[in-house]
View 1 (cartoon, rainbow, N blue to C red):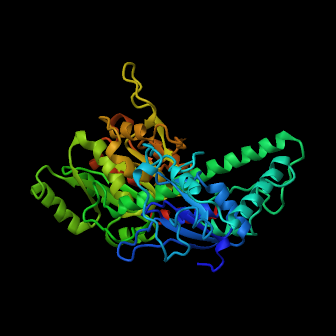
View 2 (view 1 turned 120 degrees about the vertical axis):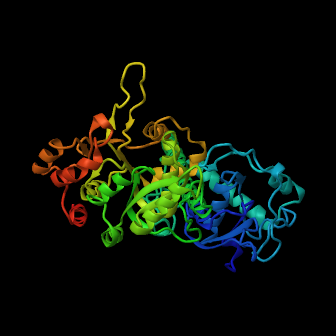
View 3 (view 1 turned 180 degrees about the vertical axis):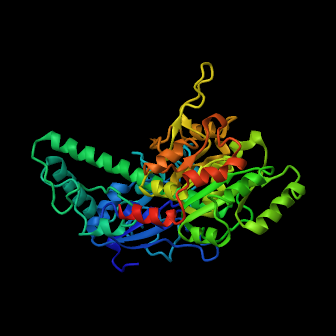
Length: 513
């Protein structure tokens, strides 16, 4: 830590599992953090309940204490902020001067504010105007030192200047401090205005300027909430991956970072559908070395299946033999059954997120023809959530909400992570496509109604291919798939297929666009 205690801010009441990056994102809102030190236990690597942050100047450190004290709540704990070394007397020695002396034990539950019962997908940083009672009592226990009195007087003087409109409301940080620290994490708003190079002076006697500054500060605080919430979502996904999660893929790959991919395509299949699987392998699903080369380009294709009601029985052994030959199965910790498709879909997305770090996750039935090149090029255009909307259950008396049809749909990494984290509490309907639509209700999801994604079997898909508009998927609406797919799949592939090398060509075209 720095030898200058005036520039060092003490942060107390930390949760023992708080990530260093989350705390750093909060601290840099007022200026450049020269050093951040969170003492940890050598055996458990958990935080000891406090941290030290060194700013460039004493003014920035004092401003950070003034701004954050009693306002920042992280992991259901209100953080404590103080200048390191100045509050030794007023706090009965509870605040250590250096990271190696007087570690602060975690506060008792009675001292903490009431925790919120909001789920993990909501904001995890709450703001409150109440100061912790323990700090107020400690401040009245002993008189303040002479140095503390001088600091208090100076602070009061600056507050008076702020209220009189003769000084800027927020001091500008050192050049490049916020942008350099937050690069690689997307756009994150700070507590400063967009023009952080120049101070914006309030017009004297004009209350509208003060209200504008207050409004901008409020917006910045809301942005900080969203930023920390996003970080907590990433942390929750990593925890779910480390714990394996319900329905993890078999075998589990704990302790290893999932391989990177662009899209994971899961083909829903059953024990009795071997002929369907063979018809796909003979057409649009690659085999052997071609399948491995496709994965090197970032496209993973797997037949998705669980296990029978009697694990290790004849059905499971038959899949084991087939998988040993083709190496194109994704085994789930799920009991197969037609009425369990909603659970299987939920388990598939959970296992896929834990197995591959992909941008998109696709579910398709085993009686649908897919042009992989066209599908990947559509996804590579930057669409966040892609599905053809279809009023499948539009008959009177049976009105479901609008949702994606179950033959094929794709969801982004964020939505798949949401399903993975919240799968124990997601309600299941009788139909798996209806269940997916219900899980996404209430989320800020961009639904793209692209009717060109899917089309009917020949002559429809053949005409579109001749016109230069190759369909990504083809099936018969009347059969919710290709009617008699085992007998017709090869002919449909010959008439509507995009040809070899389409994946590489479409990837290159999308990148150029």
